[in-house]
Length: 316
Ligand code: NDP
Image 1 (spheres, protein in one colour):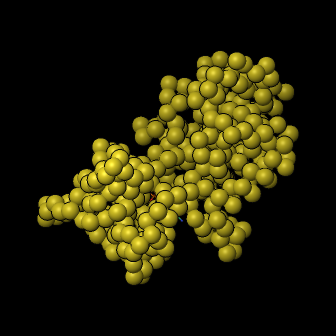
Image 2 (spheres, protein in one colour):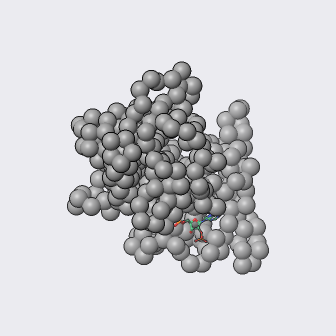
Image 3 (cartoon, helix red, strand yellow):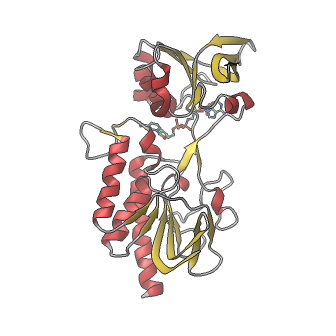
């Protein structure tokens, strides 16, 4: 099924990048369509307090920030749809985008599909995902009241998740593969000062161990390996959270636009153009360096201005 209408611009994704692009293109009277995707509002909807988004002296909850951003874009006419794009065809114009079986046409496209939490890839991790293993503390922390929790990773995500999880768990152990942390000083110090948090370095998770009682799976142990001594041992634990970074959500663009080896979208160094004229990319889907809500929003604004200029030049 195809929509007859050729839209000026379709925005794929609804994190800070997508919704800022929506706000700017809506104010430019381009009547943008936003396909919000699998996680409307993006990654900030699964964080707690955002302390580093300018304009909020006392911080703001991630889901609230995204709600406000959406409403602000809608106020100027952005058409936000709770659907996801599962296929694109940029080989001819207008560009074709597919949401399930429905085809949508656009003169210009802004890709703002963001990134998702990385997993270790262990079969046991997959087996217990949702049954003691999680990649989202704010979604699942509540289920681990007074229990023992491990957080894997040594960056800001791991520190933030660990701090948050101390609200629920009786003890939280951060397990990191090196003895130096990638986390910012302030986040690391906060974790170090938290009496419920213990930091374990030079250690990796080898396997998730659990039981299946009457069809109910639960985690009982983490098989940990100390990389310095080579010792492998079982650590009793009920919850294991992954905080090891993110991967860009760009699978549907493979073969359609140029991607870096690590999957991030290649854009010009000075603007948001991809190698296909009329297709622009912003936010975490093309930025593996800064990856902040505010930089994503900034690049969403850039993409909107790039689209406006492109449409003026090519479509009058
Ligand atoms: P990072 O890439 O910064 O850190 C990932 C961590 O996970 C690293 O310590 C890494 O180890 C470890 N890791 C990666 N892969 C594996 C693996 N296979 N096995 C074991 N450990 C692994 O990602 P983050 O998500 O933490 O942060 C990304 C960006 O987002 C940063 O710029 C950060 O500042 C920002 N951020 C900011 C927050 C805030 O300000 N509130 C909150 C969360 C993130 P190694 O160090 O050895 O590579």
